[in-house]
Length: 478
Image (tube, rainbow, N blue to C red):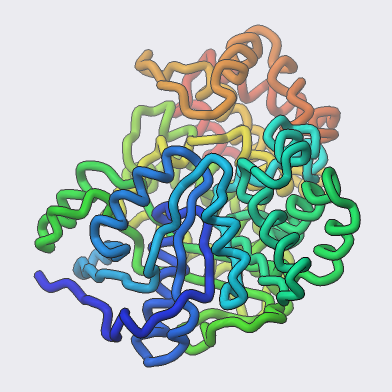
């Protein structure tokens, strides 16, 4: 089995991008697009400097520095697996509590883009309002100590302060996380944090720094023994952090890069002013679909996503919820057939080679539900449409957070707020409204009697009859 290696001289690359958050998704997505561009002999001044702002990021730095910052990416196509070594990152900055090396790197004039993948929950958003929350402890700490920040956004603010003082053009800040309006969300975090310590700097950032919106897509499972074994099959047994991913990938961006950008359109990136349409389609249909199949699979002791998709009740549940309660409220997308897009999503979820886990899909529901499920529910309620399926999705999440599958197996903590969620989920067994009391999750949706009644009925049925029986009733119903 052969491994594709960089088809260019890496010694000729120079950095143009600092990327914060070197998880699996970035290394299978943005890093691959740049690797493809460099293979065309173009864009050599846009190589990546990797960075992290959390103590655990140091382990990833050690692993990647130990292999010259090369990442192994294995595409899991049912027709045959392929592996490549991606060389678009040329260094990984030291991980420090005050982010001094990161700030210094972002201050360099040749750095024209700072990009981020810090997870959906890393933007300090108040879920009930959907806006930046300046009262959170990490933000308060950075606001009080702006020269030694602990967050990615604090480091960005510090670097932009230095660039303004030096008369250096600001870099573009490019979010690569799954968030509606991710550029606007990132701008709110950066400007909002700057305003705590330097209102004039905040105004300058708001008026001079670009935050393009973008939509990113590729399924990348977590790395574990299976993924390391796959790397070993390709003769890469020394790599502790290989990435596996599906063959499909997509990237849609606003073309708003005043300091310049790599010619990513040459390698399949779509530049369009209609990013919002693409991202809504993806977040509601794909991410909402993941949330829909996650919790029934978890409660029915199903380990892998493709196994859940092979179960007729879970597959039928996904089909009905999507077609009746999600897709009707997805606006048209340029040059896209939404029914064909959903068919593609079903095919991607069903890929057995990816071996994505239900547990990964169940992770961090307190951050994902407000972004991926509640907006569809809100639109369905406003339109007077069906909401029973989405109410069941929410009830399944609640039932999962009680910490025990239908068979009685323990569900290990799987959310940053697990203790609170479990307490509320157990209370909701007697009083379903205890779960809907989470205003940060549900907001005004919890006050809608149609949803509240449907949720309560579904949750009580789940406890009384079990997941499979409730799914069968829903799938077989009108």
